[in-house]
Image (cartoon, rainbow, N blue to C red; front, side):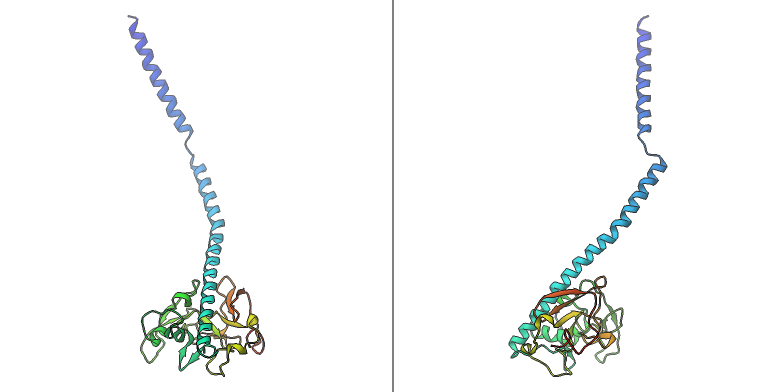
Amino acid sequence: MSAWPNKHLQKRTHLTRTSNYGNRLCAGAFTLIELLVVVAIIALLVSILLPSLEEARELARSAACKSNLKQVRLAMWLYSEDNDGWLCPALIDYVCWPCLLCESGYLPKEKGTAIEINAAPPWGVLQCPSETYVMKDVGSEDGLDRACDPDTGYAWKGSNYGANRYIVWGYTPLIKLSNVTALFDTYLVGDARGSGGASIGPINPLRLPKLRHNGIWNVVYCDGHVEGLNDFPKDASSSPWQP
């Protein structure tokens, strides 16, 4: 007779413990309002951090761009040393300087002729990581589509960079590197717009430097140092455009 109450008591105790455990689980759960607050906080943090992350990515792309410009300047100097001191022309016989340097072995190239290099998207050290292109039929006699600047609609001519047209331009007398009196203060190659000529200068709107790095354009000077600038002189008759 005494065993029945004990069994009943044990059963009731087990039920009570189970019920208390369930209450504790319910007490630790999030309410809908709390979840919405957490989601709102996460969204706010993401909106704050994303611009900083994109800015960091652009800084990395700009650093890679500057490295490209240093290598292009080295290729131009090697060309000058092998050609009695003459600077590489920006354009000669309708061949732009990127093709000339690639065809002459001063810069690596993909397989193809000079015409195909002119038409193809910029690559390697001639490609700025912050730039894009669109393939476009420009009505050329060879029938090849050209990689063009989406902002100007003109061909890149194998490079996202332009040479200073006042010291390495094919339609004016070429000069020797030794004739550049202020190497540290004369532009050599910098961020350019697609202009069909791979050159930069302050007069023709198509040849203005392109401020593609959050309002900054990168340029390598004749002495080899690289700067990021937020503007450029509009007067083409003096330094840093003229040698």
